[in-house]
Image 1: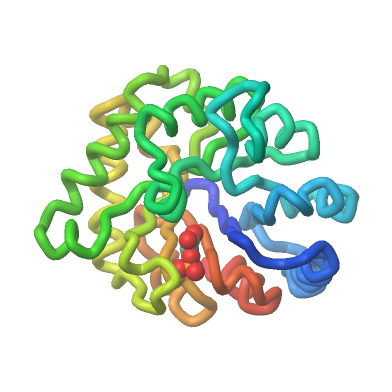
Image 2: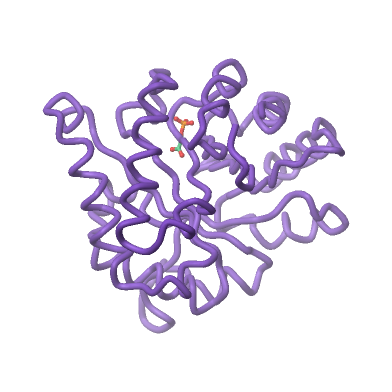
Length: 253
Ligand code: PGA
């Protein structure tokens, strides 16, 4: 277990109507250990952020994040949601570069750099997602891919800009598949990410940067993953939709 902040974030993806979302939040509140030292973040769909923020009043332990933001400030971009709008409904976090958006929406490093800029300008803490696909892992290219994803976006920024950064390592082959990275694979990559960050910025920054693991992390395997020296928590998809499981993951340090 690391000495860094411990963080568990739930990525609800495109799930839950307003009524279902409120029920899930109530479930998380009911099952959450009141003494937990883990920082808890939930990332529901844009549609329910404002009512969930209202619902969470008096629950400072659970913070709110969005799953994406526009690379633009405002204007004629039908269907897009700006970082400023996300801040205005009570979010403190935003996921940037999730592999589903990289794949289905062809988000490029240039776009992700702009999204990161908009997020930081609007005081959002980015949860920057990186990770290789199965072909890249099988071809032993995973370290190069992850290094490239980090460099292509983060090298535009200064250390000062990135104080609030979180990184999520999510191997694409583990997302939603039920196949989790082994704790050895997770630790190896998290240590590599930390080393890359220390080369790009500084050792001190790398040592304090929270790096979350994502990809079929659940109530049964979280303890083993979170016990790894360089794993500081998780970005949880499927298992964040069940309040009891999500809260067990939160208590897995
Ligand atoms: P999963 O998703 O936990 O369902 O694999 C993780 C993610 O995509 O963030």
